[in-house]
Image 1 (cartoon, rainbow, N blue to C red):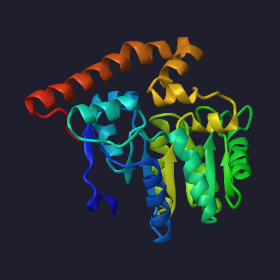
Image 2: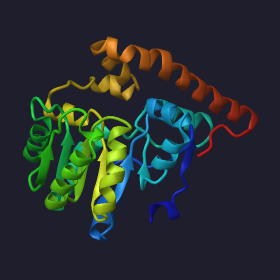
Image 3: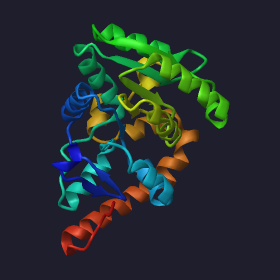
Image 4: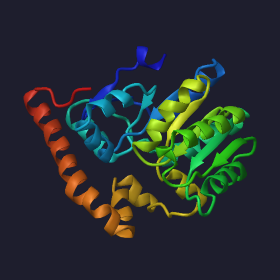
Length: 265
């Protein structure tokens, strides 16, 4: 298994795998060939903030098979503390690179999430299939908002996924809803891989425009989203996440200077 030979990097209460995007894809494809499924989580600053105040949530995420840094501040914090993460690995990018690798292997995907009013999951799945010849679409579903509050509706989705039997499932419901659903589904699909991908389904479907690459590379993708949805995101990004990110970087620098522990996982 991967964790037996790659030393994980603790950042803000979670252990992060120091992998590049191509390495993640290679690991997933190798595991599928060996009949092993798994779960990828992509922590960013907002997720770390929520995990820091909820030990149960941290314990839940620790069960994931891979955890990669979907947030430039996590990469910066690790480097400030003297432990390297090679790069940001965004869930919105993994949807594309994993699909490309899965297509080459003749594997299948199931897309869950997106806007139910526009059937976003089906449109995202069609876009991926159009982009990567050989990618098989096992299914796509955009459930109504609030479905995850109904055990009966969750069971119904489980039945659909079970019948589809995908190799990879993209779940774009937002954190932590998508992770909690994945925790329920993966026990019934031990040979499948799951990725909680947040807004990626909306990005692929074209319902939401992603930030320009220059902002992504600079770690400022959040600024683009804030400009587009200030009412919804101002409190989260400016009053909650920004102070947390500053404290995270300060702890990392303090560790670099004093050698006292900065992050535990």
